Image (cartoon, rainbow, N blue to C red; front, side, top):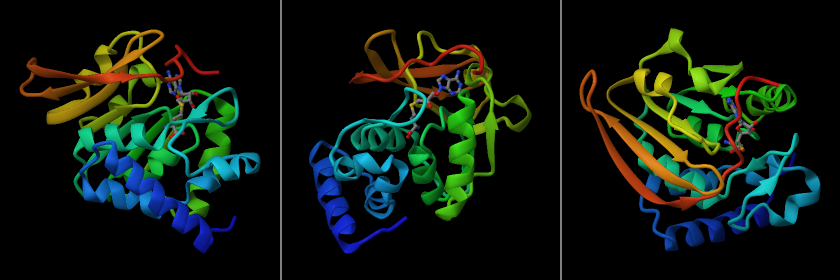
Length: 213
Ligand code: SAH
């Protein structure tokens, strides 16, 4: 597990690319510049780690494209100390970005293999989410609600009601909605039953699947 000057240099180029695509949040850009993405991928993909692309990880899943991670994180507007729920831990890269921003992170993964691997790996790099859960993200995490932010990192065929219900007032849900192609969607909770909805561009994610595996 090495992070060299070469990797750091490549990361700075990646930051420049992500910034040129429209990401403005300096904290988010700094997190991308700091986190050794190559360590989140299987060694065969080392050379690809700092391209702005999604890549395969274990269990037929993918590590999201850095631009997508940055875009979703920017929409979440994380402040230090915020309670954030992530659905789809995967490689843990997005989880690490949220930790870096000072959030208290709760993250759920439905694939047992990935769950086990990432739960061991993240603390080794110094990233400590509050809780990592093997479970089904469709139902959220009622016992820890309300959350200041919820981020779904898989394509949701519909917006799970449970997730909207677990937002604090003022809280933000960032979720890609759709089957083959997803529309990035932001819900802001304005009141008990009042939600503001904003839609952004199209993205492609692996699907949010029902139940755990
Ligand atoms: N945030 C991850 C993205 C991984 S891809 C990263 O940065 O690497 C999406 C992940 O969502 C996959 O690991 C997949 O297993 C997981 N997933 C799919 N459906 C889920 C569900 N219902 N609950 C929790 N995780 C789910």
